[in-house]
Length: 168
Image 1 (tube, helix red, strand yellow):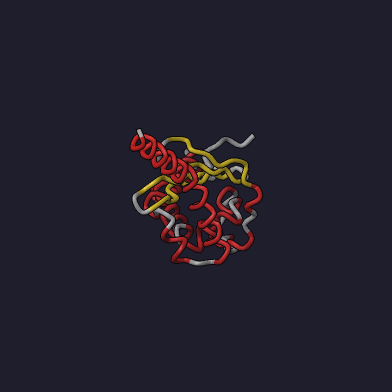
Image 2 (cartoon, one colour; image 1 turned 120 degrees about the horizontal axis):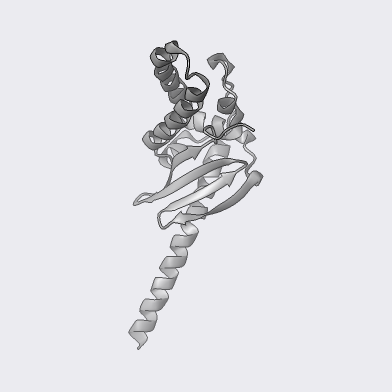
Protein backbone atom coordinates (compact mmCIF):
# COMPACT_ATOMS: atom_id res chain seq x y z
CA UNK A 1 0.00 0.00 0.00
CA UNK A 2 2.87 2.39 0.80
CA UNK A 3 4.45 1.72 -2.57
CA UNK A 4 1.24 2.63 -4.38
CA UNK A 5 0.92 5.82 -2.36
CA UNK A 6 4.50 6.84 -3.16
CA UNK A 7 4.02 6.05 -6.83
CA UNK A 8 0.85 8.15 -6.86
CA UNK A 9 2.63 11.06 -5.14
CA UNK A 10 5.52 10.86 -7.63
CA UNK A 11 3.08 10.80 -10.57
CA UNK A 12 1.17 13.83 -9.23
CA UNK A 13 4.41 15.76 -8.69
CA UNK A 14 5.62 14.87 -12.22
CA UNK A 15 2.27 15.94 -13.69
CA UNK A 16 2.34 19.25 -11.80
CA UNK A 17 5.93 19.88 -12.91
CA UNK A 18 4.95 19.17 -16.54
CA UNK A 19 1.91 21.47 -16.27
CA UNK A 20 4.07 24.30 -14.88
CA UNK A 21 6.98 23.80 -17.30
CA UNK A 22 5.60 25.75 -20.30
CA UNK A 23 4.85 28.76 -18.09
CA UNK A 24 8.41 28.70 -16.78
CA UNK A 25 9.75 28.24 -20.30
CA UNK A 26 7.65 31.14 -21.60
CA UNK A 27 8.94 33.34 -18.77
CA UNK A 28 12.52 32.35 -19.72
CA UNK A 29 11.72 33.18 -23.35
CA UNK A 30 10.43 36.64 -22.38
CA UNK A 31 13.51 37.25 -20.24
CA UNK A 32 15.76 36.25 -23.16
CA UNK A 33 13.93 38.71 -25.40
CA UNK A 34 14.08 41.51 -22.81
CA UNK A 35 17.80 41.04 -22.31
CA UNK A 36 18.50 40.61 -26.04
CA UNK A 37 20.28 37.30 -25.38
CA UNK A 38 20.47 35.79 -28.88
CA UNK A 39 21.79 32.43 -27.66
CA UNK A 40 18.93 32.04 -25.17
CA UNK A 41 16.36 33.05 -27.80
CA UNK A 42 17.89 30.59 -30.28
CA UNK A 43 17.62 27.72 -27.82
CA UNK A 44 13.90 28.39 -27.38
CA UNK A 45 12.93 28.75 -31.06
CA UNK A 46 12.53 26.08 -33.73
CA UNK A 47 13.69 28.33 -36.58
CA UNK A 48 12.80 26.04 -39.53
CA UNK A 49 9.22 25.66 -38.22
CA UNK A 50 8.84 29.41 -37.56
CA UNK A 51 10.25 30.14 -41.02
CA UNK A 52 7.68 27.80 -42.63
CA UNK A 53 4.88 29.35 -40.57
CA UNK A 54 5.74 32.91 -41.59
CA UNK A 55 6.16 31.92 -45.26
CA UNK A 56 2.71 30.31 -45.24
CA UNK A 57 1.16 33.45 -43.70
CA UNK A 58 2.91 35.86 -46.08
CA UNK A 59 2.04 33.81 -49.16
CA UNK A 60 -1.62 33.77 -48.09
CA UNK A 61 -1.59 37.52 -47.34
CA UNK A 62 0.04 38.60 -50.59
CA UNK A 63 -1.76 36.06 -52.76
CA UNK A 64 -5.08 37.75 -51.89
CA UNK A 65 -3.83 41.18 -52.89
CA UNK A 66 -1.78 40.20 -55.94
CA UNK A 67 -3.82 37.42 -57.52
CA UNK A 68 -4.09 39.32 -60.82
CA UNK A 69 -0.41 40.28 -61.19
CA UNK A 70 1.77 38.09 -63.40
CA UNK A 71 4.99 39.52 -61.93
CA UNK A 72 3.99 38.18 -58.54
CA UNK A 73 4.51 34.58 -59.64
CA UNK A 74 8.14 35.38 -60.50
CA UNK A 75 9.06 37.91 -57.84
CA UNK A 76 6.75 36.96 -54.97
CA UNK A 77 8.51 33.86 -53.62
CA UNK A 78 11.89 35.63 -53.70
CA UNK A 79 10.48 38.64 -51.87
CA UNK A 80 8.80 36.45 -49.25
CA UNK A 81 12.03 34.46 -48.71
CA UNK A 82 13.92 37.73 -48.17
CA UNK A 83 11.32 38.99 -45.69
CA UNK A 84 11.25 35.72 -43.78
CA UNK A 85 15.05 35.47 -43.70
CA UNK A 86 15.15 39.00 -42.28
CA UNK A 87 12.77 38.20 -39.44
CA UNK A 88 13.59 34.60 -38.55
CA UNK A 89 16.62 35.42 -36.45
CA UNK A 90 16.82 36.01 -32.70
CA UNK A 91 16.80 39.80 -33.22
CA UNK A 92 14.11 39.57 -35.90
CA UNK A 93 11.76 37.57 -33.67
CA UNK A 94 12.30 40.08 -30.87
CA UNK A 95 11.51 42.87 -33.35
CA UNK A 96 8.39 41.10 -34.59
CA UNK A 97 7.10 40.62 -31.07
CA UNK A 98 7.73 44.25 -30.20
CA UNK A 99 6.09 45.56 -33.40
CA UNK A 100 3.97 42.95 -35.23
CA UNK A 101 2.36 45.67 -37.34
CA UNK A 102 5.59 45.78 -39.36
CA UNK A 103 4.61 42.64 -41.24
CA UNK A 104 0.87 43.18 -41.02
CA UNK A 105 1.12 46.51 -42.83
CA UNK A 106 4.14 45.73 -44.98
CA UNK A 107 4.37 47.88 -48.06
CA UNK A 108 8.06 48.28 -48.79
CA UNK A 109 11.07 46.33 -47.45
CA UNK A 110 12.79 49.66 -46.73
CA UNK A 111 10.20 50.18 -43.99
CA UNK A 112 11.71 47.47 -41.76
CA UNK A 113 12.39 48.99 -38.37
CA UNK A 114 13.81 46.67 -35.77
CA UNK A 115 12.76 47.68 -32.31
CA UNK A 116 14.48 45.21 -30.07
CA UNK A 117 12.59 43.22 -27.48
CA UNK A 118 12.91 45.72 -24.68
CA UNK A 119 9.79 47.35 -26.11
CA UNK A 120 7.69 44.17 -25.90
CA UNK A 121 4.78 44.71 -23.55
CA UNK A 122 4.19 41.28 -22.05
CA UNK A 123 1.32 42.59 -19.92
CA UNK A 124 -0.83 42.31 -23.06
CA UNK A 125 -0.86 38.50 -22.77
CA UNK A 126 -4.54 37.56 -22.97
CA UNK A 127 -4.16 33.87 -22.24
CA UNK A 128 -1.67 31.04 -22.05
CA UNK A 129 -2.88 27.45 -22.02
CA UNK A 130 -2.37 23.94 -23.32
CA UNK A 131 -4.09 23.22 -26.63
CA UNK A 132 -2.85 19.64 -26.62
CA UNK A 133 -0.62 17.40 -24.51
CA UNK A 134 2.55 18.76 -26.18
CA UNK A 135 1.34 22.16 -27.47
CA UNK A 136 1.12 25.37 -25.46
CA UNK A 137 -0.40 28.58 -26.89
CA UNK A 138 0.17 32.15 -25.72
CA UNK A 139 -2.00 34.94 -27.12
CA UNK A 140 -0.35 38.33 -26.78
CA UNK A 141 -2.47 41.09 -28.22
CA UNK A 142 -3.60 39.04 -31.22
CA UNK A 143 -0.29 37.28 -31.86
CA UNK A 144 -0.38 33.57 -31.10
CA UNK A 145 2.88 32.02 -30.03
CA UNK A 146 2.72 28.23 -30.17
CA UNK A 147 5.27 26.22 -28.26
CA UNK A 148 5.74 22.47 -28.54
CA UNK A 149 7.42 20.13 -26.14
CA UNK A 150 10.64 18.48 -27.22
CA UNK A 151 13.04 16.49 -25.10
CA UNK A 152 15.15 19.63 -24.77
CA UNK A 153 12.19 21.66 -23.45
CA UNK A 154 9.50 23.90 -24.89
CA UNK A 155 10.28 25.63 -28.18
CA UNK A 156 8.46 28.26 -30.20
CA UNK A 157 7.46 26.58 -33.46
CA UNK A 158 4.64 28.78 -34.79
CA UNK A 159 4.30 32.53 -34.70
CA UNK A 160 0.78 33.38 -35.89
CA UNK A 161 0.60 37.10 -36.60
CA UNK A 162 -2.94 36.93 -37.94
CA UNK A 163 -1.76 37.86 -41.45
CA UNK A 164 -4.18 35.48 -43.13
CA UNK A 165 -7.26 36.93 -41.46
CA UNK A 166 -9.49 39.16 -43.58
CA UNK A 167 -9.42 42.85 -42.73
CA UNK A 168 -12.79 44.23 -41.64
